[in-house]
Image (cartoon, rainbow, N blue to C red; front, side, top):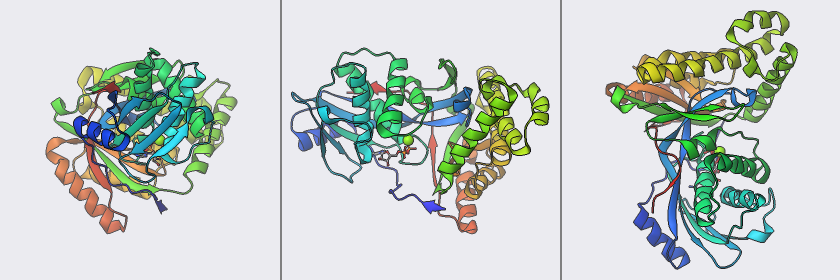
Length: 395
Ligand code: ADP
Ligand code: MG
């Protein structure tokens, strides 16, 4: 186990006028505008994306904001209020995949991907101010990319639709940053809407909004960031993907998305024991996403607790991507009053979510903090998120 090297305290975000004033102090001149894009939480549907299945993330009320001014030349100047590198200058003409270091690879990647689409991207000054916690599995990196792409889409008059921006962001991540990510994070950040989750079909990339409002149901959604990342995360991810590919091949389907729950019994006779359990996770998880979508529409969030629980059990026992910290967060919050809880994200560390009656929130927080201390784990970061709007201009 290792603790992440970057500081994890949640950054505090400035108001728009303070951000504009800071921009002027740093760069001179006023920003042309301020745009924001949120981080995301995946409500349910884990490791289903690369099996061409379903996911159900939502945009959260934590955003990356960018104040941007177009420059007359091809220079890009980038600064984050989070500190670290200070102002970084780059030339638009020198942008090469994998050439950028540190956080600037995200805004530069977004700019590069737009240029790859033939869009005439100008030099800019950009001040980033984000309150999406870094590296907590809430996709602080996509929040940056989506804020930048939304700003440039408007400033260049490119007029890209959300889906084109989703694909441009994926290209930025895959080719420029060098991270093999799919479309979930940016779909939530770009297409999310207050009081809704984004139901995404990773096969045809169709997205639709599903009502998901916690407050009227008397619920809060707690994120419990365990602040650990286990060193086998990368290898674990690659081996899970390989098992899924093997399973699909043996079962003669294009992707595990094509296997139904009713087909599992037959599959068990064809697959080795471990591959079968990996397959069973993906197949049942896809089914849980569909059930969640239906229940949210028919009965609201109070009805989905058992599906969150079943998702966690499946990741713990069948897909084996949980860890003691995540299991403890889930078990403790359930015992203290949460109506459903699961790890969220790729696994081997990161965060859990706990859907909790508002009246039990403090009890759950206390119980989890106490259980972590007793187990000798580092204190987790616990906070609430609510389903919020996707990327937009705010000033
Ligand atoms: P996640 O996207 O799950 O938060 P990543 O490792 O993909 O985790 O992205 C985190 C990275 O994003 C950080 O290491 C940093 O480079 C960048 N980042 C996120 N927020 C900020 C910020 N406010 N200022 C500077 N860099 C940031
Ligand atoms: Mg990321």
